[in-house]
Image (cartoon, rainbow, N blue to C red):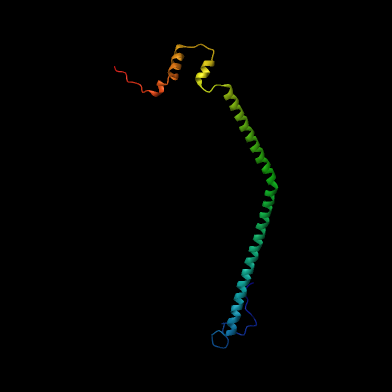
Length: 145
């Protein structure tokens, strides 16, 4: 609302009554009420704009939430499938490791003894050194030159 001069005003255009430039109490009240009305109208418009914006955001939020709720079962199914396949892969890996550890001996020495190939003098000496406890427990002596 645009401020328009009140045609019913008892005061002169300079804002005073018959007092010679001093505002009368009635003129002051009219001015205050007009200004207050203008401020209240501005507040009303602002609140209406805020309310309409809030309604739009609420509607948008409801749409997004409803879409999320509709998509939730699909997401749960996908996650469930991933968990099941991961569990299956881990189970297969575990079974494979257990089967391979049952079939093969754990030490390389045992592997070497199962190998029916040729047996060299170097391998014989290496196996003797590896199986001798003094190799790992006794400090080697320095050779004197």
